[in-house]
Image (cartoon, rainbow, N blue to C red; front, side, top):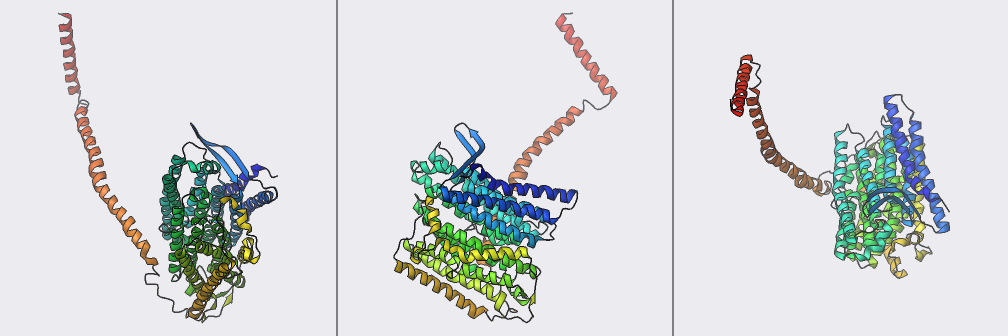
Length: 629
């Protein structure tokens, strides 16, 4: 059996990497330049160590059926409230940590090639390692308070990386937008935790204890807590109405886009709901609400993506849409299905972002898909892996996205949520359409220029090839029983009390066939419209869909401009007239009084002599009276 103390080293490895890279970067800036190789070894080595430790714990769990739990120290002790800096390595946490560390490691390797020559190379890897460490704190936390530390950690790191090029005003605005939108969600998350603790009373704050005592709380408080916790997930996982930060987050370097969308921040909300499965299983109304939010978020994002022209924003909206599918699953109680889609999505979404980044570098940081097509470069490995990713996310068998997405659609149908199922099917059509629209424009539509070969660094192509294997084969890890599979992922995540598909094989075959037909239809429509599209006459960027239904403008008018006006009123009335007026009045009175007192010390010798004479006279009069002279 493995040593339990290894659990914390999954977190400490990338955390120490962040500290080392930060220290070396400080030396690099202040003292003597340091080779990028040093930052690269530290930056990629520590995530690899974290993955290998996680893998060893996973194998031990498979062989011995153990669960790892480690308390490092008591973080806070107040009367009967004790909060331990504790970590839990159960089936759910280790499953999540496995692909977070593995995919995160591959993205770190990719970042070497992408960031080469950047003056902030070392600082980037320090932030990158810290981001991974924060996500692992969230995943491995033994109680909600420690989970919240990781929750806030990924928020801070996302801000630092989105606004990495802080000399560019747009990047800073994007970073601020992400940070503020997530603070709104985090406020709900905190209120949800407070409500949950109030509902359960003085119990141990570990997830195990919370689960054991959950039936002792009133349903009303549990429903309120579940709703407020999900508000936090809306922010982190970019769901309606707190999704507006995600497309703008593409301002950061492409490696951070890959890490946010594939292995860290945006998946945190789905994981959180699954971690609180014992809460949501008893409040099905909130679960249904979550499923509907997921469905409409998936649909909205897919519609907007059909008219976007920035390659990274198309992929960003596709992430929001796929997260919607995940919330459909966990909302309806199919936690293992939702987490399985998180797993498969990590492979093909990381690969798509990294492929997009490779093209962006080759085309001198151009991101408009029509302009990229006009100056198309020969990028064979990127082209092949990008096509694999597009097929996988479109839900075409036997690629991984088909199995995970089909399980979610089948879950909605089984539960009688036919509207959600219909929305999911239509979204699947749109997904295949806009993803192949992007592919046909980038790689197929004719252009007038001769394509030229561009060398791509092996640190970029190696991770793409590995991820391509996952995008193709990861779905077989949860192969359906109707094909002779054993639902290995569902079995591994049995602790979440996840609901499973139990419908007739005929119904499953029909639903799968419909899913494939819908995806193929989307591809056909995209092919007819864009395979021979004139890339020199791009689509009009005007219109309600191209402008994202003007939600950003609406938020700006309602929240930003309204806040500015309120602030202006407060500044002119409450601050200047009341607060400043009171303070200045008091100050002026003190000044006036001071001027009068100052008359006693005016450096006039005659004035002083007169005061001395008056004083002495008073003394003599007092003595005369008191002594009866």
